[in-house]
Amino acid sequence: MSQWRGRRAAALPPLNYIAAGVIVISLTLYAVLGGADFGGGVWDALASGPRAKEQRRAVAEAMGPVWEANHVWLIIVIVLLFVCFAPAFAALFTALNVPLSIALVGIMLRGSAFVFRAHGAKVTGEVSLWGVVFSAASIITPVLLGSCFGAIVSGNIRVDPKTGAVNDYLAWFAPYPLLLGLLALAICAYLAAVYLTLETKGELQEDFRKRAIGAWLASVILATIALPLSASAAPRIWGGLTSGFGLALVPAAVIIGAVAVIAVWQRRYGFARIAGVAQVALIIGGWALAQSPYLLYPDITIDNSASANSIILAMLISLAIGAVVLLPSMWLLYSMFKGHNPAAAPASEE
Image (cartoon, rainbow, N blue to C red; front, side):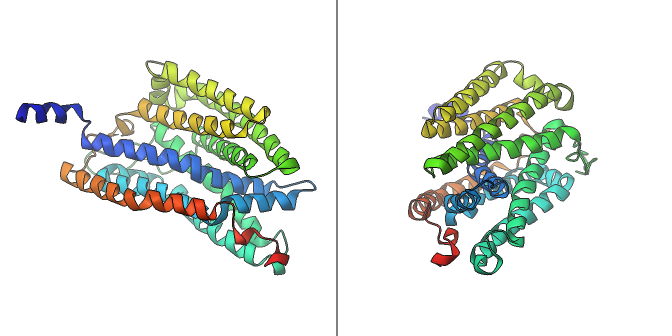
């Protein structure tokens, strides 16, 4: 019996790698759900033409009262980093304190501005100061989060193994990280437009179809620039994506991305959404595999920054118990309120 237990334990990945896997899954969920919410703000800012008012209302109705709930996935990432990989958390939130603080303010401003604009429409009209704040925060925040990602993959954040001090507080403010920030913004806008094609009909649906194709083209251009630059700007990631599994993942992401935009072109919006989500999942999964076992290359790994197994196990058990409440609650929230946002109603209907 003891031998069987030993073989079973050996077959399971170490607890720190399970925690790292949960972080990657949570990041993926935040990208495809929270990212689309940021993208909705982009299209709110770029609403134009004779149906500009209807476009903004479609964004508000699609976001509904559920959009702020999507930040739960980012919270899970932060908590897991803090509890399970404290040295990595300390280094990341020290080196990236400025962009992460601004992004946090942006997230809070988006939420408050969205509500204030909706309920103040009778006084301020369709376009107001709160509308500008909402749109600006929706654009700036994903760019900053993407640039933080770029700083992480670049390997320019070095950590002293003895003191934990970091060497660079501006690693995020460099051409390559900022390019990835723009790419993140384009992907968010693309996801939002694809989702909105399923929330609208007629001419309004065609508006978002065109926007989805435009955002896809923008993301392709930015990705085409970023990928070869990775050879010098992010050598660890470049090496992972151009060898081994990367030789399969990169073409797979390209093919699925092409399938997604073809589906949009052919007005097969349900399939386009599935393909778009799959593409984002492949991008994040490919990055995680390429960077593994490093959390911050080349100084902090999943192994040398992990907390004690007892702490990680307690965290994972707590997360599993919380999921029993969280997942049904999220399902209930979406099923009850998705597409039924009273704040999106015209002022005359309030």
